[in-house]
Image (cartoon, rainbow, N blue to C red; front, top):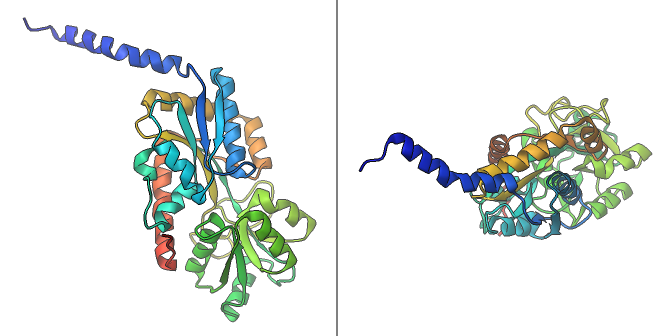
Length: 322
């Protein structure tokens, strides 16, 4: 005997009920939170803030698990290949926006293999110069660079890193020619810039603001499209004459692709609510970050746009890593 349409609907609701209940009860145990960089850096700081928010809100521990290496790709790969049950989540960073543009082969696809939860924050970078360099703004820097091609050197935290790609974008938009000096980390790069061994660099604001304040480095611009609240007098690179320039590091939260949408929404709701509080916004600004809480769909679109942007720059600069 054929069932009435309402009977079909009732059967469907019964079938879906356990899924809905499971999402409401989630999490019922500790959640592994992969942070794809070593302790102490911006990703670790942001990851632990997110883990703390989620732990307090859900009553279950979100346990930070630092898995650094390969420019953030080892940890991201672990996350992508973990069970999509909500009990593994991870930080998704600017590295996942750059890596597809520069690596010839990757063991995972950031867009297809990771589910976006929310973008937490943008971390703009300061364009700084050694005080001995007579450039107080972008225009003066470009004047020096173009009058003496390849005479200026710039530091980065390694090939394909955010400081490297930002400077390559700067060169792409301006036609300036400067020599790249890669380092293994920001600390040594900043030490050598302070000593004058390299003349300029892009570095996350939080990492160099104390040195700018002491006069050991001079900030001439901020990499973001908007001015930086702690240094409102500082021009953006675009205001300095480089039309269309907008970049920097960023931090977000994700999970393995296929994680139930209700779980993604629950985590998004918790994080976005807390990130948008005045207290959290102020805490982020003190850390050199600007809150960018958004929806999973908006974060996904942002990630795709970042990959497209950096692919264009990498091809123009002929940057690739095996």
